[in-house]
Figure 1 (spheres, rainbow, N blue to C red):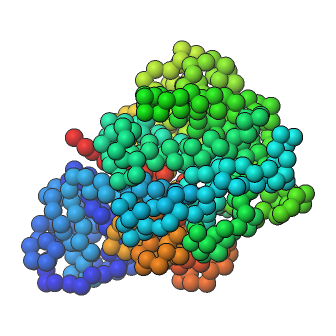
Figure 2 (cartoon, helix red, strand yellow):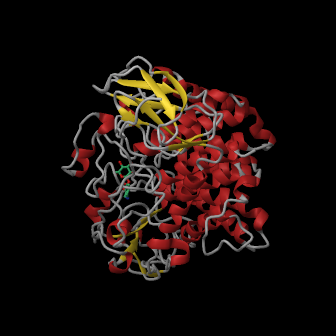
Figure 3 (cartoon, rainbow, N blue to C red):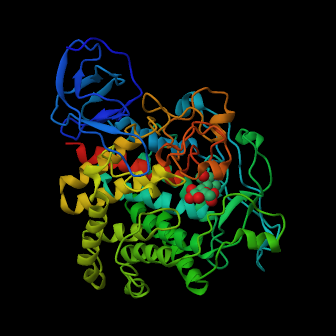
Amino acid sequence: APSTTPPSDAIRLNQLGFYPDGPKTAALVDAEATRFYITTPDQQDTVFDGDLSAARQASYSPRRVRLADFSALRDTGTFVLVIPEVGASTPFRIGEAVYREVTRASIKAFYFQRASTDLPERYAGSWQRPGGHPDTQVKVHASAASPERPEGTVLSSPRGWYDAGDYNKYVVNSGITMGTLLSLYEDFPDHFAHVSLNLPESGNPLPDLLDEVLWNLRWMLTMQDPHDGGVYHKLTTASFEGMVTPQQATHQRYVVQKGTAATLDFAAVMAQAARVLRPFEQTLPGLADSCLTAAVAAWQWAEQHPAVVYDQEALNQQFDPDITTGAYGDKNFEDERLWAAAELLVTTGQEQYFRAVEWFPEDHIPLPSWAQVRALGYYTLIRQDTLPPVAQEVLPRLRQMVQAMADTLLADVDAQPYGTVMGQSPRDYIWGSSAVAANQGVALLQAYRLTHDDAYWKGAVSNLDYLLGRNATGYSFVTGHGTKTPQHPHHRLSVSDGVEAPVPGLLSGGPNARAPQQDHCTSYTSDVPDETFSDDDCSYASNEIAINWNAPLAYLTGALEALHTP
Ligand code: 9MR
């Protein structure tokens, strides 16, 4: 066995570990070596050894990366990877259910984001806190005034999740987040019937994942104007509050202008929720019906108001007070409309929703993001055992398109420096790049569910490896899960709570090539796209957290666990 070597940050791998029958790869960054060894944690016994690959380089990075492939090692246990000339990795596991805890944490993270409630110690541990933002005295902003609800009307709109590092609640971003979490349940109901999250509601007959989803669903329902079915774009303070606790954040909250994107996202979520909650009618009497009624009213509003943009700058020219919080200002509603139609079609079986949209506006499927949700509609159609007869005709093409999307993601993966699907293009390193990686993984798993072709599963695993450490920063981007994790996310709850460790299970946004210009934080140490990350709470463009990033992390980890559970 090689002699004992100290840990080295040049060795990057999934810090949680690997499935026995799964791919296992580590990366060595900017160091020369030829052999690697997998040993027991004390480095006394070598259980596997192999050759490092030749060095590879991305077009956008000066780093030379070699890979160590130890997929053939199937022993379970805790190990380290040793490269005698360089150093050792931190210990990692090979075992069944290696992502069980991170799955739970990535969903429990939503509990920590709950507005309007105390988080007692028995559920929140060290991150217990008194509630804030009751949101029972929310005002109708001038931009949202209507005859029935003039400016200044007081509304009650409690619950929901804080969007991100800030304390506001945004319908558009709740849309993709809820769609992704409801889909995780819809795809793996048997698995999630048994995933327990230690929530206040854990004793009830509902699976915990759905209990958590309900916290935001009930808030979303309050964001619809019952007089016309339209949905307010967001519930927000006029400007961002300081890095204070929820109880100290007491500025007036408003609902602002209704918009087409928010209303269609709402319609999609409510239609999907109606379907998913239907089997729990006894526990939640009437809720599925209420969701469907809300979805239909929202759809009808959007048919009458097909192009109401939420343009914050334009609103601020017209109305007071100025609103300067997150805009989520999408201008294209074709994808939201397709998603809403897909959910309404599947839930109601009514032909009108099939006839209402052009199902193939483009040949390829864009990766989901808060502003682009077409894939969510497609995923919903392909996951059904049976579709209404009119819709059958689109299925073959849809299946082929989902597969083509996944094939494109896999196209060049074997030549990548880190061997991950993430990072094949420098354009992957945008604001919230961690969600790019996670959503690529989700897309690959949709193709895997269709075909059972292992290549898609391995591609998805490669992106989880990216998120948990096999990347150019050496971080596992999930707080509290890994050996090197973000300590200072831009997250008001974590900054203000007096607890040293940040709230666990949160996905940091990740490297963002434009972050230094976007947040003016000065602690970045590299401008290489995949390294432009700073574990500093000033770095909201690379180190914030957000619900729409945690949701695909929950899907990716949860689906891998569900698929892997015998
Ligand atoms: O995730 C959003 C990203 O795509 C945008 O480029 C960015 C700037 O508009 O805003 C991000 O969303 C933020 C939102 O506006 C406010 N809450 C925090 C969100 C995450 O940073």
